[in-house]
Length: 181
Image (tube, rainbow, N blue to C red; front, side, top):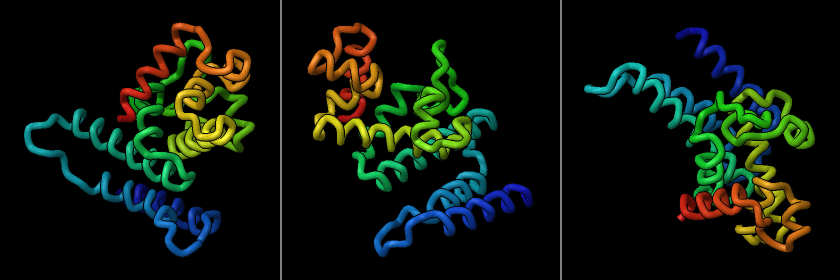
């Protein structure tokens, strides 16, 4: 437990150094607090340790998605829907085409977003939510086009002036929009 506390302290120190300190930004120290809360809670009665651990981990992931969404000005429900559709909130998920982590970032996209460690759930989520924000901005707030661009790439959405006629992308957009309600 001491090593967890040391890691949390280090995370907190790094956040203080690199996070904006504008008044009213509630994001600055909340990641460490969420992690501390999740790791200090005992398993609930009737739940096996592995289930409790998995539930706590998914709770941590959900909190990180929410915080990143608030930080980047994205609807938290939309960010959570993308994370759920991409990986089911699984930080170890790797797609057959090489997309990695909770937000299923391609390594090249992650690099372009300044994500240093694509396997770190916090960095992966922050990068994925920033990318979602870029797509929302690029398509003037059109959520359907932004979600399609997240899946198929912005050029495909521009080429078809909307959701490309790929069944995977059409199904993905429908799923994300349904989850975001």
